[in-house]
Image (cartoon, rainbow, N blue to C red; front, side):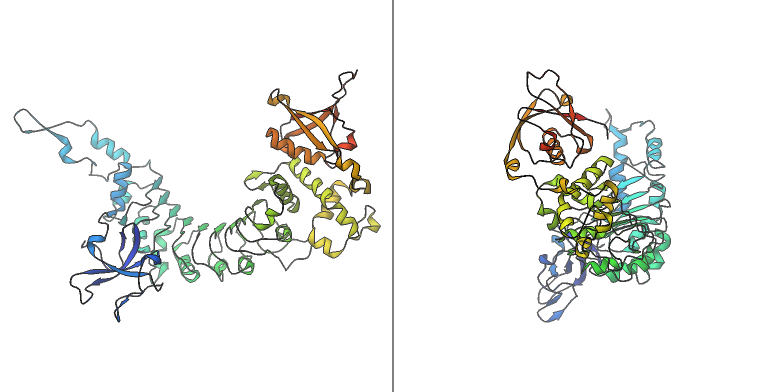
Length: 533
């Protein structure tokens, strides 16, 4: 393995590592590779053995010595990988094995077989057509001969080099410098050495606008140095690294429109606020970053923050958010339209997934997409009316009133429900009758009804529903039973009595009203109609 030197990347029994030492380790004879493993649990020491230091590792158990015979011998150039996977060949290279051009004739002599158009087809494949190239996990160690990739596949726009054996950014640059139209670059799971002067590689990466650099044990200072290599960068994915602080990130990457920090254990929400001056940032992903709170302390209740002026989308799933007040804070963002929020403790306060979604929609007024699903006009109306009903009594007790001159809810209520005033201004303040609890007798009354949806077939659902159930809750039930979205439902009911001369259909037109308001009785039929949203 003459091509392996200090700094080379290797695989041994499926484990990836970097050669940090090459030579003898007395008292044994023969050559050893001193390896720093990507997974430190694979190692035994930090590069010192029996009192002698041979190399250094970042982790105290990140290193060990292995013999050459243990190292996976399969290694190839980027050009070889391209040729093998996509059948491409450079000009002058047909990509055909010379031995395949002959057969053994009757006289035991080789006879050449004419392969019509072989060279022509190979050349046609090698030019113009290939745009997206996936060479993940192909044991690539280098670019190959100078200029050969440009000759082979000059129009690549997306290149995936993740999980290979490339040793440095210089070697990556030898590849990308040949691709004048490259826009997206994947180099995740490559422990690439940074050059002394990262800016020296900027010309080789000047067209790249999107970089995936995940799972490389990247720290903040290293990331800041990388910025000089990526002059045209607009989207950066640096997931599952060792980034805990975000100092100067906004200043180094001012043109970013998307930043994905998923899986980095940030110290606090204060770190996220350090990105607030990024005027071009439209999408921020901070899933699984250990966040315990969200707060824009520069802004009062009901006002918009001056931070993140262009942010349209934020993802905060798999964090440790426990309070709805944290979700309220997101409504302070000027342009927020899309939210992904799953697997946070606050969402477990209600086991009803539909109710949780409606709560998210009600608390953030500008949402158009929630957890990757469009928010319709009807769904927003449903969410906000349900919010009034759920917290109306709390509002009254806190000093709220349907008469404007008497409406003086407490500061605590305003902080806990900052959109309540906006919502009742939109739909009208609820009357005391709307919010009065139903009598105990009615609460305990169960109505036996039939639910039918003609567009779903002839099936009849027999249900016993409490008289106190609101139309909104009924719609949630219907969505579960019939898989008809709340926003697409139109509900009405008719009498189930056979002796009824005129069976009038009555629309359930107010989501806040309960079933007793509409005088629904045992045996009545609830009709579900699907409407286009």
